[in-house]
Image (cartoon, rainbow, N blue to C red; front, side, top):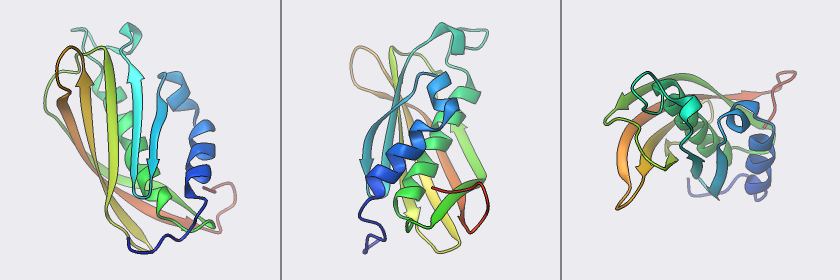
Length: 149
């Protein structure tokens, strides 16, 4: 990741995130857009919990997948988009907190495949607590109708 393929990557990521209805549905917002690093935050919401009152694993996965995917998009040239083709999530601790932070970072950029790693944190009183980690594999997409950055 020595060379930035698109000086307007922040605008592309921000515009794409604004079109993602899933993030809006769960109340997530883009809070950091750097080259190869994305942060997404969201408040705790009872309607997004599982039966024990913890943030549901599906919601954690959704937010971490987006953080990893947008980290990958940030290193892509303007004519490329990304789609997740695989991810592995480790749920390390119950999703209990007032807010949640999801950070995605490109681990291995590439022209066809990009690997991103993500970390999910619960924020309450005291330091942020690591609650989940993810490794995601993203496919670079070019020239497909209906799929753009």
